[in-house]
View 1 (cartoon, rainbow, N blue to C red):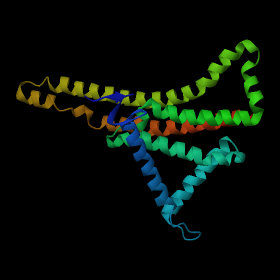
View 2: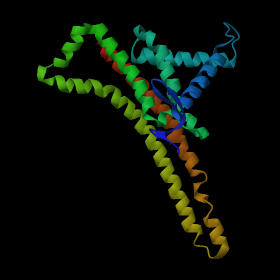
View 3: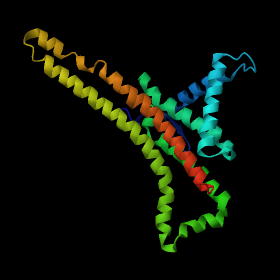
View 4: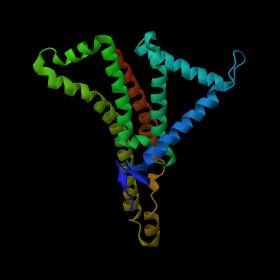
Amino acid sequence: MNLEINGAKILYTIHTAFGDINITQTLVMSWIVMAIITGLCIWLGHDLKVKNISRRQAVAELLVTKLIDFVHGNMGPQYDAYIPLLGALFATSVCSNLISLLGVWSPTADLTTEAAWATIVFILITRKKIQTNGLGGYAKGFLEPIFIMAPMNLVSEVATPVSMAFRHFGNILSGTVISALIYAALSAASHALFGLIPGTVGQVLGKIPFFSVGVPAVLSLYFDWFAGIIQAYIFCMLTCIFIKQAAGGD
């Protein structure tokens, strides 16, 4: 019996005195993604030189420069402390989204992955608000413009991580569903058309999904590559915006 949690299969269960710990596809693939990113960072960052740099070092410097420009352009130089966080979020999101191209389970296909990222961002946003306004000022903000708005303000505050998580998860999931539906439709169309050929030839050709060759690959450029990268970009962009707003920035 294959048990699942949020669509991810449970590969192994560890029984402890505090309860069962389920090792799911999401957990395993998340560690694999982190191992891949760590390996790339080690490879790109080793043996750095000041002169006569290699192409590998040029790529590493380009990535770091683009990341710094992204943070400075959206938040400002005073937020340099968030550069490692945003770089890690973007790299993890992109790698998690694109790893499904290898035919394995994508961690972002599990809502708990995006929920964990959004929770971390929410904690940072709340921390920045308290640092900027003080604990009393932060609590007072829930009573503005009048105290009866407190429940709505509280819902609005909690909605931030929820919307970030569902936006990322929903867009990635919708791309996967659309790709599957198109592939199934093309297979059915191929079967219906070639099945019109009489005799054994029609029966044989009708079983071959001719229309499914090429078209899904082209669509994959958008739904897997483009959508996967753009959703990672949007998640990091929202993180920048919310943290800057929490600090009182425009």
